Length: 162
Image 1 (cartoon, rainbow, N blue to C red):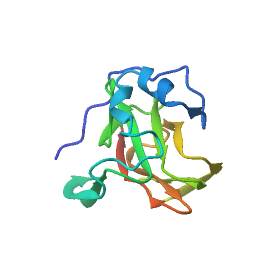
Image 2 (image 1 turned 30 degrees about the vertical axis):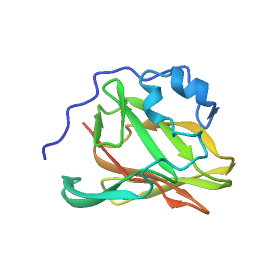
Image 3 (image 1 turned 120 degrees about the horizontal axis):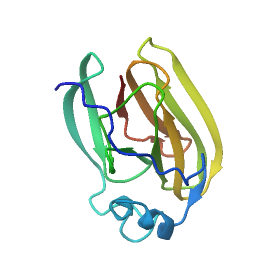
Image 4 (image 1 turned 180 degrees about the vertical axis):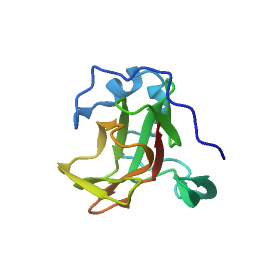
């Protein structure tokens, strides 16, 4: 798979970093209804489980799973929400939405192209939706994910910075 083109969409600038969002707020985002879990934000998604896939991202063959339940993260790319891959120009930023499925401590994780790993502790979160920013601050492939003290890992998202 080739490197994706940089995003042509604008980020949703009205959202703050780490802000909790109600289901109504999420559904009012462009394409936000696709992020909602049937039965409410804390409910597991209907399919439960995951689907295995393998693709070429970040300089090698990467295995990843598309998750249907648990801790999930989406990125706003070219005007839509996706599990990735995505791409931005250096200096751009875009939105991510995290769906937390249970009461737990949350950390975000980013692996940079040079191998550096950055962790950010977000605190104790209740089930629901939260917003965070991704900033394109280093050229090359980045891997981002979220880790919950009870849920474990979210889906990984690959982002290329031009």
